[in-house]
Length: 311
Ligand SMILES: Nc1ncnc2c1ncn2[C@@H]1O[C@H](COP(=O)(O)OP(=O)(O)O)[C@@H](O)[C@H]1O
Ligand SMILES: [Mg+2]
Image 1 (cartoon, protein in one colour):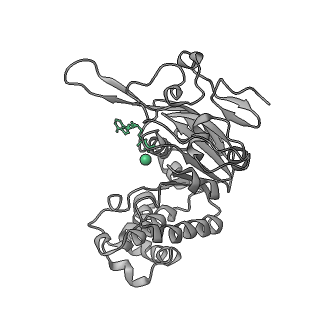
Image 2: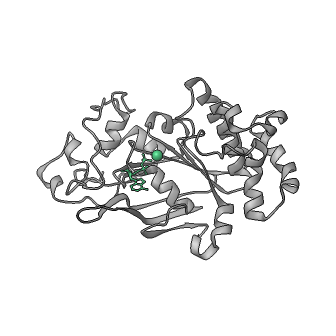
Image 3: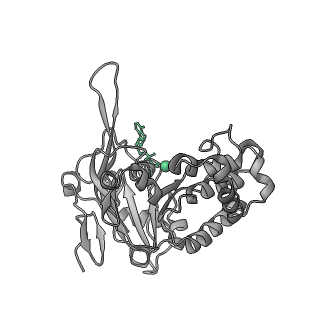
């Protein structure tokens, strides 16, 4: 359904004094997702997950690389067709909805913008979608500030589904919500995935959330792929020291407890040489400070670590 090849996004940070700096937010990422499956994307805050989402959506222009949906790139399909196929639910339900619009207008907006429908004509299907996401009809006339975080995120979902996309990206969709509400919204998301036969990209900084929902998992570190493969393969036998660290003190099915993550994510403005994880890696050797490990197929998954020998 979705194929991503060598996708990069470098932001340029303007300097008043001195040279402009390059932020390598996304650096040569490749993966694919099959129709109807859910890919969990995981990594610490700042490792490029939202940049990946925005670049896939087309909100940010990629620096290089290409994404294709059923074999066609955004350039080939055109923006309008692309947006029909791929939509996104944003992380923050408080800032992602226009406060001046009522719920019904927010949900109808994609039909009005993309399909040129009037509000009157879009209202019927918007109202149906509002109810599909578990909101009562009277909520249609409310403004975002009159709604709870969970209700707003339901509107974000309804809005994203209006164009009947085949792919839905959910960027930490429940991170901003109360823990008590999180499960409700996640359950709704799973129901909608079934009903609309969605291919899902689910982003989270928490591997313990991802490990319950994904068919496959993409672990990102500082804009790059650390490890990518089927969920069970990665959870049962994580190979990259970063994946192992994210799984932390909870033992994997291999029975081993992995040491928790030490230190902080380095800046993508000035990434370490060699393997960007080497400074925090409990297994790092001298060669890791020099050689950049290419993503390679080892033991049934893709992993970017030179210390792993194929089994
Ligand atoms: N518009 C931007 N301009 C410059 N740097 C940015 C911009 N957006 C994100 N970044 C930087 O890119 C890196 C990745 O950010 P982001 O994709 O938001 O990470 P994540 O979603 O995993 O937390 C961060 O270092 C962030 O500061
Ligand atoms: Mg983010």
